Length: 77
Image (tube, rainbow, N blue to C red; front, top):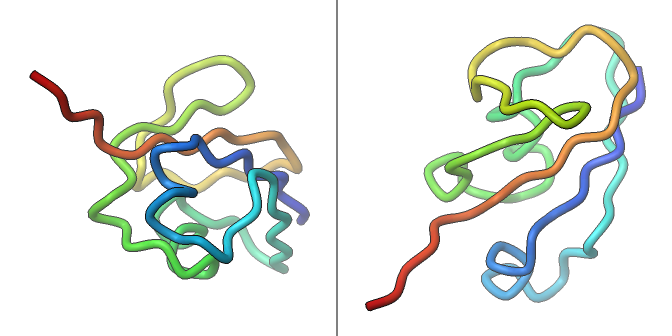
């Protein structure tokens, strides 16, 4: 399986070596949290994931090649 992962700016700023788009390859389905770890992102900083335009739980495996967007925490005041 090949996952194309788009990473929101609020995460790429925390990980300077990370590209806005990354690829993850796997022989078995992965969860969002597992993909984050493979990319070197702390799963605690991934607060939302969108898979094919829909919000996806962070701990459910994704069984198809697909595009994913990861979002980090948003802070402000």
